[in-house]
Image (cartoon, rainbow, N blue to C red; front, side, top):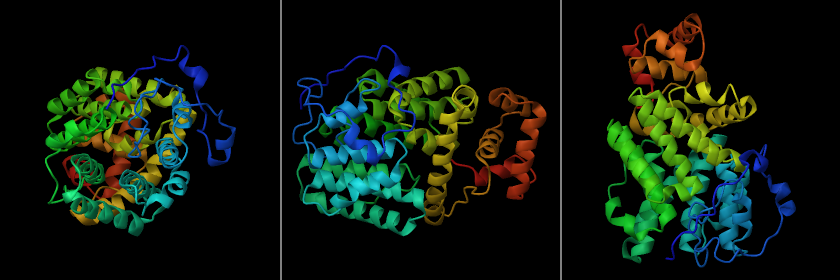
Length: 374
């Protein structure tokens, strides 16, 4: 595995912004470029989540995709781009042909991408089937090469942790797998570890893992870096450290916006403690609206998979603002703190919270906890 080459930040991050991403119909219009020698150094023979494992400057995501070898690798990279830019239908279209591929990297990638993309379309049975196939792959790889075992463990961890589900019983120790993953995937695996620590309420340790991963090269890989910054937002909001949470959110946004990589913001909305309403909505209302559309689609599917498996009752009848307000209230924030954070009046904050409690049939802030994300 050769070392990563960082391309540097774009001089004008706004100049490369893609208002609504590149659609499948637009692919042919993307400027075809020959492979950029030395720029994306570990494309060769890599079909497992290749875009996630690629360093590129903000605004250069599509150039990275088109610089890959035509065929399996580029197809999987397009599926990744479509998924992370909030186009799950196009992601499924690109990834589905590889669900039964003989190429293990492509097959695992397709199963992970499709399983999460299905959640956007109420295709719960297909999502659950995909997750079951991922768990089977973990068993099937028991006699595989160390790299294949590491990739299967990576996918199994991603499939479980992001849905807040228990890890498979035959899950190997991820710490032993980390050195076997290339740098970009290792960075995302550390995001998964940080997310797991967050779920254990070890917020300081989780933030430390995320920040260490970013400092040790994870910041060079935009897709993992976005997710690492987002989990740090979750941690700092849980610690009521709004300043550090805001800093991490804006770092994630600076990486995501030039290439329209907004999916992660929609996925994490409920865990970000109203930070999107506070920092993104006032300045980028159109982008915020699209993020919230992702949130409604994704969270509906997420709950339909998560709630029956865990027996939990994460609320499904609140607006995103009501949910954010209720999350903060359940964690001990006062009405004044919620209002100040969301940039609304105290009466408005009280109204959001009152509506949430009425919809959930609870009479106290303590009663909100059972319906909130952990």
